[in-house]
Image 1 (cartoon, rainbow, N blue to C red):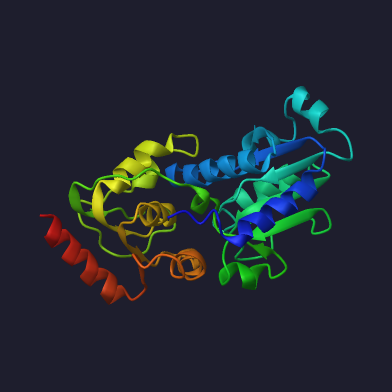
Image 2: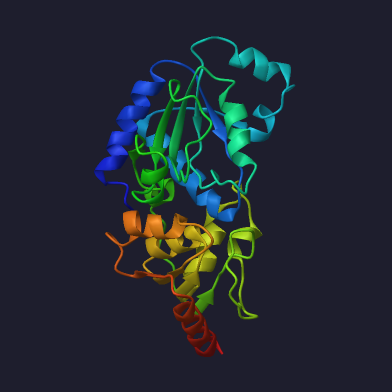
Length: 275
């Protein structure tokens, strides 16, 4: 079930249209993994539906002090505007917050699509419009930001038929938690990038009747496909915050687990069921 008909998406569209006006708008493309591809796909569908065209520029180009002259020529002028792809990258253990700040400084005005804000970003509040994707962590970190669901919730994926029982799809990167994972674990999000086709990603998720993960967009993909999803705590408040804001109110098939003993028990049960 998509959330594209929730009122916040119309509010986001209205605000974005006011921001864009008749000006040229660049998209500061935030890079990421296969899960981030769901954000990018949802955002692309949203922008097309609301009639806003953007010129995408990778953040890797904009964060450089000396980037190509064609970008310099395009970015000159006090009226130039940019949107920043929604993400969970505003974390103090990533370099991305500083990179986004550098990229945003190239523009007169910036619109940050729904993102997680555990703290106040280093973007000029006088020139920046912020939208947050949760009502817990980001409400604490940036209370003046308006709320709309993660852009992945705008998607309407086609149905998939499950052929297996349990999928154990936990993250193994810097945001992982210190819990023993079974040998069958697959960090699915790490197998693609934000540029990857989302259909194989959703195919892999949809292959399972039950999803066990602490990857946010694996969980969102499972929710959209109507799967039984068990979300487990990770290193940050991100999953709990989005679960409380966007999953728990709309998806009875999604459950959140934060107790370590509960996590170990559920994983052991899933491993047994899958053998």
